[in-house]
Length: 349
Ligand code: NAD
Image (cartoon, rainbow, N blue to C red):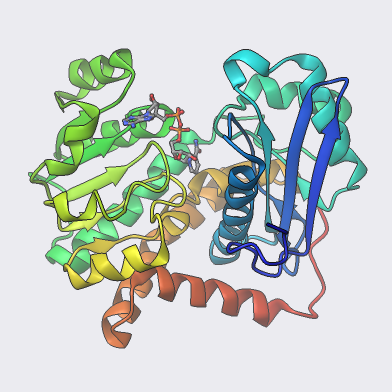
C-alpha cells in the first residue's frame, strides 16, 4: 500500500521515511499540518509488526497533534514520529543520535519529544545533536493529568449535572506517569477509584496511596462506574470493549482511544459521553511547548490548562445541539481554528 492512498492519509504535508542501516534505524516522521506553526509531537518507539502498522500509527498520531495543538490555542502544527523497534532490546545511543540527525535536517519544520518507548533521558540524547527538541525540562505528566481532570469535571457537569467529583466512582486503566497523578487528583476530590495495570507495582502504588481497588487488566471494562479513564494504550474503545462498558463518561489521557471514528458515534448512541482524548490530554503539550518558544510562564500554562474545562464543555454542548459525536465536533473546531489561521503570519519559535 502506498502513502497517498493509505486509509489514514489526510493530506499530510510531508511523510519522511528515515533509514540508517549502520545505526539499525528505521523510522517515519509525519508532518500533518504546519499552518499554525512548526509541527510538534513526540517520538514513539514500538515493535510494530509491519511498516504499514507504523505508518498507520504515525499518520493518525500526527493528525491528532494538529488538532490537539490547534484546539489548545498553540502556535504549533501537528507532527509525530515513530521508530520501529523494541525499546527494551533495540534502543541505544547510536540509534537515538541517528534519529535526531534526521530531525535536525528538517531545520525546525518538526520538533520532537518523548512518547511511549522514548523517555526524557532519550530526549536528552536527541538534544546532543538536534536543536528541535522539547519536553525535556520538566515532566509533562502532572500537567497532562491536571488537564484530564478538567475534562472529567466538565463531563461530570454536562452529563451528571454536578460541579464536584465527591463520591463518584472512576475506573482508571493504566496507572503510569499520568494515570497515577490523575488517581491522586481524583482521590483528593473524593472520587472512589478502581485501577488496572499490567505492572503490579503500579497497581500497588495506587492501592496503597489512594485506597484504590485493583482489578485484572481485562476486567476494567466491566466495572460499574461513573467515569472510565483510559490512561494506557490507544484503540481500546472498540467493538469488543464498548458493549461491556458500564460507565456514563469516558475521559482519559491515552491517545487515539477510539479504534475507529464509528466507535465515537456508537458511544453517543449508547448515551456514554466521550471526552475526546486530544482535547483533554493537551496539558502536557501546553507546558512542554514552552521549551520551543522559550517562554515558560506557569500562570499562563495553568490558565490554559484550566481552559480545557471550557473547551470540553463547549464540545459537549455542540454535540448535544447538533446530535453529533463529540470527537466529530472536536475535529470540526480544530479544523476551523487551522483554517482561520491560513495565510496569517506565524509565531516563530
Ligand atoms: P506510561 O507508560 O507512564 O503509563 C502507561 C501505563 O499503562 C503503564 O503503567 C503500563 O504498565 C500500563 N499499561 C499498558 N498496557 C496496559 C493494559 N493493557 N492495561 C492496563 N495498563 C496497561 O505512559 P503515560 O505517560 O502515563 O501516558 C499514558 C497515556 O497517555 C499514553 O497513551 C500516552 O500516549 C498518553 N499521553 C501522555 C502524556 C504525558 O504527558 N505523559 C500526554 C498526552 C498523552
